[in-house]
Length: 144
Image 1 (tube, helix red, strand yellow):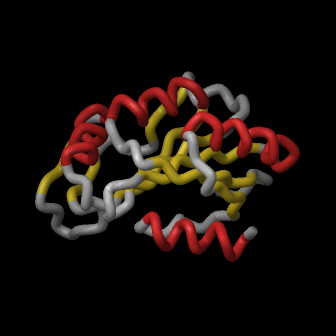
Image 2 (image 1 turned 180 degrees about the horizontal axis):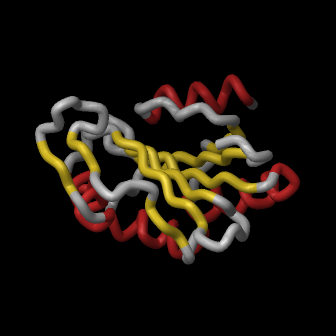
């Protein structure tokens, strides 16, 4: 991330494409996804499959609850929050994230946790969250 941003993460058990879209619309409506193709699996070379749309990857990840994946969106006009992040875990959950100015982080984290109905939330710095809910909860406990 860099550039003076604070990353905020919450755990959700709802990885439906509709739920992820609701998160994006609520927190980053003027977004642009950072990729134009999505390799399945994420880091495979060569990939088993290549998807080319945001809807395609969201629907794929909803249908494949054991597929870990990280997606990133930027805010096109430089307004806050600056970035949305969604990390699908390999145990059927999703970690929703935002990157914003540090001074806005505490209130935005509370708002994000309320939105997701989550008691597992934390602030991080440029580190991809773990890919299971159990590990994320442990990460939260260590930070708490």
